[in-house]
Each structure stands twice: as C-alpha cells, then as structure tokens.
Amino acid sequence: MSTTLPTLEALPGGLVALPSVYRPQADTRLLARALAREEVGPRTDVLEIGTGTGALALTAARTGAAVTAVDVSWPAVATARLNALVHGLPLRVLHGDFLARTRGRLFDLVVTNPPYVPAPAAQVPARGAERAWDAGPDGRLVIDRICGAAPALLRPGGVLLMVHSGMCGAEATVERLTGSGLTAEVAATASVPWGPVLRSRRAWLERRGLAAAAEQSEELVVIRALRT
Image (cartoon, rainbow, N blue to C red; front, side, top):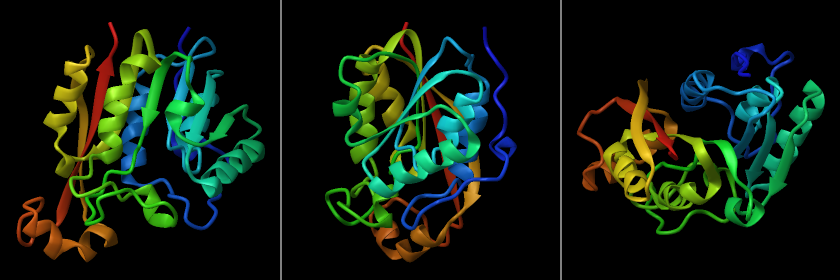
C-alpha cells in the first residue's frame, strides 16, 4: 500500500550538512516532486545513488520504505547518517561505488541526483566539493554509468528517477535507457537561474556549444525509466 510522501520541508529540524556536502537545491526539490508521484510505502525497496545530506532518502524512509543510500564521499555518508539519527528514521547508508555496494540486489525504486555539471577535466574529481557536481566535458560521466546499470538494479515494474541539466542532453539519456530495455521519458522540467558554478564557466560552456551567449537560466529535467 502506498503512502503519500512528505515534502522535504516536512522533515522537522531541517538537515545538517558537513563541509563539501551538497545541500538540497532546485534539482533536489524537482526530483522530490517526481518522487512524490510514485507509489512508495512499507513494501518498497528504495536506493538513492549519491545521497548527499540524505534528504530524498529520508523523505522516502518516512513512508516506511526500506531505503539504502550510497555515496562515494565520506562526509556525505557521515552527514546522511547524522540526519537519519536526528530525525529518528531507519536509513542504511553505505560508502563507496553504488554498483559495488549493491551487487546482487534489486530495488523497486532508484532515485539519483548525480554529478552532471560539464567540466573541463576529463575525469570526475577524486575529492572536494566539486565531486558532487563535476562530471566531465559533457556532464555525462556518471549519468551514462547509471543508465547502463539501471536494468540490473530494478525489479520488474521498478522505476528509476534521475535529475540532471538539460545541457547534458535529455534525449541522450532517454535513448540510452530505452536502448537498455527500459521505457523512459522526461517526467518533469524546470527552469532555474544559473548558479555560481555555471557562471564561472560561461566562456568555456559557450566555446563548447553547451550554452548560448548571455544565457541566464538552466533547464533541469527528471527522467523516469520503467523496467517492464
């Protein structure tokens, strides 16, 4: 039986975040609204990839769902565990690569706000706050990995919800997921002002053809993929 999910703001006392841990922003809220439309309850096994503060994982946990959260950042793992303790919610938080830490398990729902900001470096950062958002020259280093892994993570009838920037190519994400046997679509969009990271890379983004001159807003997309 499904339970209506609370809003992020419904978590009493708010959320703490250690230094370098990504705090909930517009992309988190857009993904939370998409999550609220899914059937989540005590019989739901949920995985969050890249949990950060644990905001989305804890929102799902409040319904009684069994939630596993994974992050490669130790500060994020500590933050999510602390927030679970503060709010008195059961949450299994694991450190490491999401594929290695979930091998052999299947989930009803996988939620992820992965790193997706295009960055000059060819690889994702090994440390620092940038680890939460930098994702290679096209912003797809982590997105593509999740797309390839999704069918092996989902039970029949399971759903993947992933948010990322329109700069990364929503159509490319849908095509990759469809090519792997899932039914995928853009489930939600939102336009938000550029933040400081994008503004600092304006010239580079324009040279790469990822942004138009004087562009001031970024489209966010939520991709929903179903394993039939």
